[in-house]
Length: 382
View (tube, helix red, strand yellow):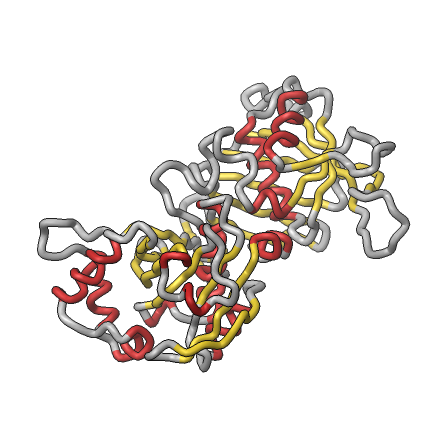
């Protein structure tokens, strides 16, 4: 997903997205206007209204339980142009609508919504939201069942994607996720003159070794990176192209390791190994041992121009996000950076990780960091 946040005024916020299937979505949050529209590929797929009432997932007078304004979702019934008129909402557009709401209202753990009866397929959509886990009704048995409470944590875990439509982050044979940095850019065309953030996409691609050939683009980058002083200091794998081909061959033959090249806008910038920890050399150092499906991450950033706190935070959280999306049985993701690497340790803490232990490999002292699934998705990190 590419995403642009445009502050139009104090009362209005507009977000533009490129969804995982390439569709372009525009969503607006306006605290003054009663009607907000969500467009996909320039067609209005739905409206939403902020209703004049608030509600709670748990009925209580406790001050720490928040109340949120209820949002009504409608089909595009108020659109006058017949070319854009729609009286139902497809399941994949409903998922995109939930995506838009959790981007516009990202600080809310839940968003209470009601589906207008004017939507032809409102019952189908209600069933989709509840059965997929994207939402639930209120806990109290006496509470109204009209409101559906969308859950931020289940949305970011991929609820409502696999098995429902092909618009999610993990379509077949894809390792793509796409957070974005805020980098100023400019567009000038015959119809547009605009300053805006630079559009960037972070991609994870399975390592292409091209068996039978002398080298590959991925291997060339890997070889050059490991022969830099900075990367060699951390990994200690400096050597010939043949050495690095043998290294990657061994990794790709290991079913417990997923080797990927990380790229910004198609430009390779680093390498990561995503492991199952039970089969990894880190396992003996984990207090109590790893869970059956716990994953580990080992990363290098090869290109100096792609270093820095902003990008590091994005690829770090995106890797964790992928691990939890790829296998719903994964309960924890762990890393083991050098204990004296203060920069990456700050990134680990900022991704909601905590230190389990400090231990010594023969070649370095490591800090073992862990983030559990429930904490990663409970917090506003994505």
